[in-house]
Length: 288
Image (cartoon, rainbow, N blue to C red):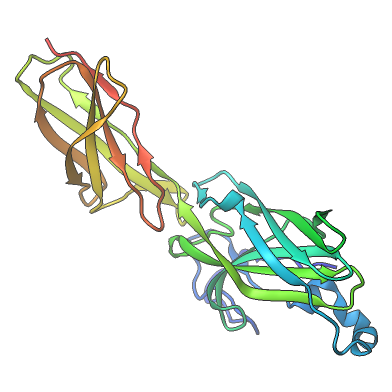
């Protein structure tokens, strides 16, 4: 039977487990107690040790592909849980009966792990592409403030993948099979004033760049980030970059331009490894 993550609300210092536990609590939010299983625990092969021993030279399955969230970054906000699909494709002479995928954050799954998300299902749904190869699918639900209990968890995670031979003679397991990124949802606003404005007069364009703070469950300004101010003429479908500015210490954006023709103004942020790209809807300004 599959082992799943246990989440516990704790206070004060959190003692380290035999494997790994986060070193500190993030505010009043729940802190996950992490106990990442071994392949034997996942596939239950420990119970068949005598049988497995009789096949000491059994061929292991070969994992050829792992896909997390359709190959896209996983973007998580402040409150809504994010459900993603994961899959592992593997082959074995007898076929594949089960697959496993989890995501973990740290440098070593046995000694240094401070984040871990695991599949919702106890067993994968496997679809055979041939007598020897199958793609096994699972879903993972990631909860901000619980699984993502600190902002430092944004960025690159390791992907563990496993596959069980149909005859249960062997399994494949790799804690470093692939990598995936989990990011803090970003937002950007824009407001161009005055509206309307006389031609040749100064237009002030303000806004704010913010991103999810998993520790507080709110959005906080993203400081010192390069953001493009872009403009699209009224009857055009193309935006062009007018200038690039940086957000201030609280994420505020502010600059001035000369008004020339009717059109739409917006701010566009290219994103970072921890925060996805985001672009504001255009703010229309009538130039008299």
